[in-house]
Length: 232
Image (tube, rainbow, N blue to C red):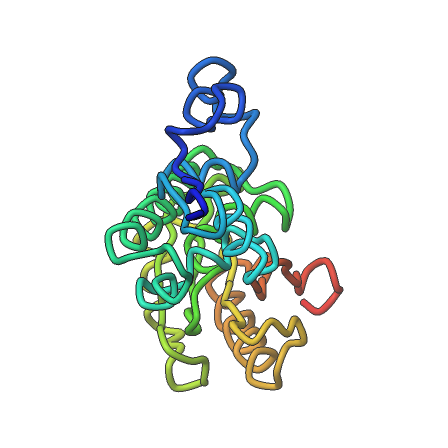
């Protein structure tokens, strides 16, 4: 007798188990990460449900949505049950989430400490796989006037142009600046180059009565503040 195949499509689940029904009746906040992803992909494969498949994908990145957002379409398609359309849907949804976080940084208008600076900059550079150097310009109330990328791809003395930093600070009427760059490697230890650039900008800025308030090194999960560490 031929064994009957079991369908793992969400539409065949009991209503209480359907992520879509759960979201509609109880709100998106009650769903797990796996259930939200299951809504995106709609169905699993012959061996596992959409939620089980989503759990397996999440497990491969340590249950970290930020890490999942770095998976390419081709990497997602390596999971059984994830074709090109599903992979593109997942990638697009996670990118929307990343852009939403970037827009939320607009709510931070005043820097009261290193944590504020970190929350302002993390959505921009915390998850990058290459290095970028940014400057945040502040007025005399420590309110953010402007933030701009100074260099991309690596940090060396030649890539950080002190004159450009100070020119922009003078044009903006800034009295304080915060330096920041990311370490894709995950290490929070400042290099000799990091320290040299900080000292170089600090000395040049003081001549124009502009203060370097901090230098942040960001990784995917944490940050180091030169000011908090007494390194300024």
